[in-house]
Length: 97
Image (cartoon, rainbow, N blue to C red; front, side, top):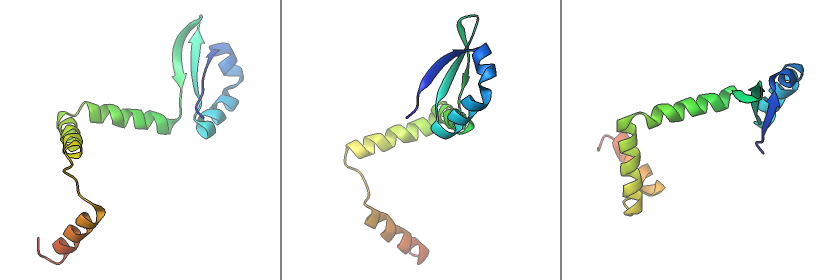
């Protein structure tokens, strides 16, 4: 389970190998303080990249419109079963669509 721990920078320096291992293996997060104030976060590269992708997606108006349309379609029951999709792909591969 992900935990968030706040530690001073002097402690973070002394424990950096341990903190890095926890971030990488347990997905823990650390808020590192300087002079008693939150200054930086220690998170895994994978989580950082995931956040960046999410931000990129949320800043893309066309992608957001597509997501909204998909949500509306789902709410209206306008969906396809796996069988529907498989049949459509089979038809397209056979040159019929």
